[in-house]
Image (cartoon, rainbow, N blue to C red; front, top):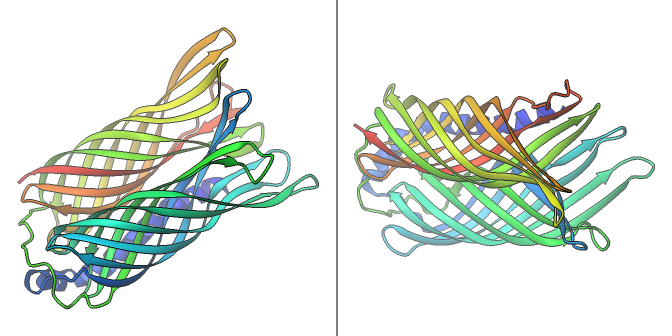
Length: 423
């Protein structure tokens, strides 16, 4: 069941992107023609709906003696509804505000000799401002920041079990890309990081816990009055066919599944940032579809901490890896591509242990796969930028125990990148 849940979370983005591509393809020509004449009016009220995938990390801390114990966390999916308002300050600069509500199942579970226990982020909302810049007349890049509130349900059934609720508030930061797909409709892809501070876990008496989330959002917005003129500058001429080199910066979460003696913990959490370099080739199949392949290597600071105090610690770091991926996309207009991708991934992990006179480290590597999608838009005749989500899952590492103890790593990552295409 755990494998199905994670795979479903990964495939959700692919399904949503495929649906968006299907509907957008039929409108692409009309949108392109409109953008070149009257433009698109980004000012005004909008309502929207969508969903996404992501992960939560609970960093449990015991304050006396100073100690950080296990980082727990896992992934899931969510749906959301949005209302917002934007205002164009100039031909290319936009400010706005929005509020959205979400409902989902991002959380962790454990099953060790009894019923399955869960800690789930089941609903919440964000209220935030955003600042945007029109990359083209029909594509907006933006940053956001504001307030976030989250309700968490803790359910451990059984004779000695309990069912408790917790409400946390904090801040949210993010980046996004939004592009026109029809007369009044836009499609967005967005990354958000939310942090809910350090508080006692489920009220008084629990260990202090720092809770944070990494989420990727894909959604459609309906904009009132968008047909009433707007940006008048021209979009760059860009060919999608050709070789390219690229670089990206990203962030994300580790969600390891642990299998021990028939029991299961889904999972151990961690997070961090990474850098990535890539090379690839794209080819325009016709006026709508683009297909390609890319090879990328990354160096990461994504780390899991399991027990850290003055006497010692354990840290696992997913330090470097590479991917060989294929992708297919549809042009939403002449300068913006919506795409899905998938392929092979390889990851190296380094583990370090200290304490009680022990200082040891060892490393291992695992094969796996990645699936994901995103939006990419041209900002000049040779340069394109993109925002992309990937779910990566790897084979289990059993440390030579014959399956008695196994770690199954998985990542939820988002990257913002730039590519130079040799046309």
